[in-house]
Length: 193
Ligand SMILES: Cc1cc2nc3c(=O)[nH]c(=O)nc-3n(C[C@H](O)[C@H](O)[C@H](O)COP(=O)(O)O)c2cc1C
Image (tube, rainbow, N blue to C red):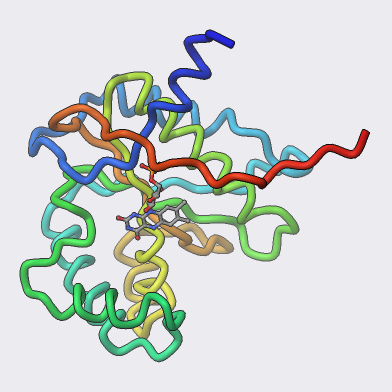
């Protein structure tokens, strides 16, 4: 079925090549508003977004995240060697030089709060794509907030009491057009008629 919104969903891709210039405040506001309009369990809206644009903070987060990955002993086996190798490379920027990071936190103890935060994140990535911005979910950021530096970052990033940082969404001006989607897995739908 031909439909502009369906095409948008299918053409969104994770972006890892960003222009260095900052995304406009108008577009950023629209992206964040799309996140705020996500559905949530019990309408709890149990998310919090921290927009990080301070380049010194982003640089420090990258270094501390790489250190957290290097010293982590709870990486899943399939990620272990790849992640540790990347984190051991001085040139690795796990945020790909993006000038804007949106840290997504969720309310602690909420029954659906992690799901709510994920729904808000997808809304923001789709909105970014609609506005011709690039986006990428950075799940590896979780290691930083589960590391010994957690409390330091709760302070630096002014995370409100009762919220736990989960992951980061990069939202920036992309350079180049989105890549082709990987083939979709088959046999993942069944009907009970
Ligand atoms: C939960 C989650 C965690 C992810 N973590 C990372 C990450 O740490 N670094 C990264 O470059 N991409 C990360 N991604 C992006 C995925 O690699 C990407 O969505 C996947 O390869 C499919 O590509 P597409 O988004 O272009 O369709 C993550 C995506 C999700 C949904």
